[in-house]
Length: 280
Image (tube, rainbow, N blue to C red; front, side, top):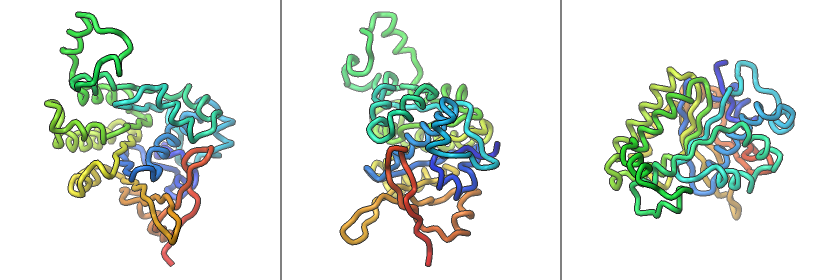
């Protein structure tokens, strides 16, 4: 296996099967432009290959030669629990995909660590009432970056890991004594170094509006590939588009075909490519 599919058939076909193993891919999007739906589709389609092969064949088809779906799919969220994630995915994807795929998704909810030092009432993000032992454990617990690091060391090797969202960490920079902007950059650079050893694929989401141009440039420079999801206007209509901004070892395939943009859509099967804009 040298590639792991993104779970979007036409994109994977264009890229030679998907993302090269050992890659960290930044998934950056304008609000509502499809970046989050892309994450959901990548997660559920890869999970479907493990949970229900017939449904995977129906909605995706055969995996390209030289590519293979990962043994495990891990989804990491800093703010949402698994039920909320399933509800959100169910708003756009067919119930059969969600019901079968969720059985194979290993979901990691880090909201307790994320909200621990915030003024948010604990009842809003934790189910059980804290006792003295729990309070002591919370005080002794490592910061959220340490928790994320341990999770990746344990689960990233050979697998697909989806992190949603870097924007949540960025929002705490400067307000959480354990997180600042340089920590965010070091995290991404560390992910890239670790991914080379883990031989899996890590997708990291960021809202484009949450970072400055300079900060965005630092993030792009720290990863192997960047997928940009944008709104494009043509006359009186708007369309969701995907641009492969940069991708080591992959972008040359798009350049060879003179592809400028992918026009995208969101249907029962999740995120999909509806058209390809080429240089003419």
